[in-house]
Amino acid sequence: MEKFAGVQALTFDLFGTVLDLGGSLTPFIGKFLERKGVTLSAQRFWEQWRARQRIEQYQDTILMLGHSGYLETARRALLYTLRLNNIPASAEEADEVMQAWQELSPFPEVLPALERLKTRYRLVALSNGDPHFLEYLVRHRIRWDFDAVISVQVVGAFKPHPGVYRRAAGLLGLEVGACLMVSANSFDVMGARACGFRGAFVNRYGLPYEETPYQPDVTVKDFTELAGALL
Image (cartoon, rainbow, N blue to C red; front, top):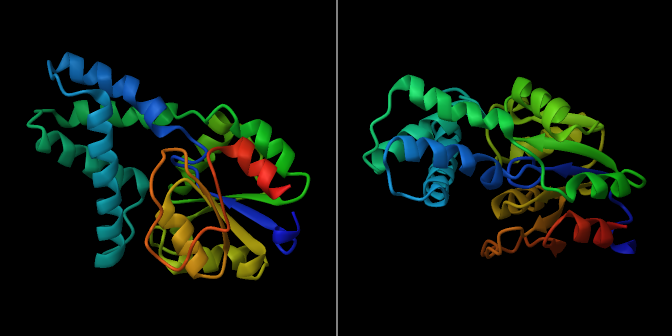
């Protein structure tokens, strides 16, 4: 599309955008809750866990006590959610639940869309994940050869810290306006747009966008629509 003529690289969020977190994790959560004799639904537990994880990440960045990493903030959020629901669990049981993150799978339409998009753009993973975890996910779960995989660890702060987007563009040898952030997380698109990126909001979950002047250039429901909009 002429609208995106200057875009050279697409930077993809992974967690919740490329990878289906809820679909991958709720079966494991459900089995855990059943073993514990808890009637709370796996979906509700996951929603609480995910919401708390975001708070943990924001706190981690704002306090500037040292970047803890993605899996550590996810673990802290899990422990908080267990306490929130009065579910007793040993450290070993919490570790067992955390192992489910090794089983994440991509949404089914992602890889066919990436095949189409690679004909025009550099495709880059730009993720809050830890470097070794990203390497594992890209190689063994997504199974896609991105042109680059960039972890926020290079900045030491979680998205939407502006340093993440600016550093990513620098590592790619591009001006920020030549990059387009693709994310199902509206705060991620907003953060990228505020730094001069273009932005695509993959609204997989039917959620409202942020109240901000930094609106997405395009909003789609999945990667099939994304490829149609960008090609």
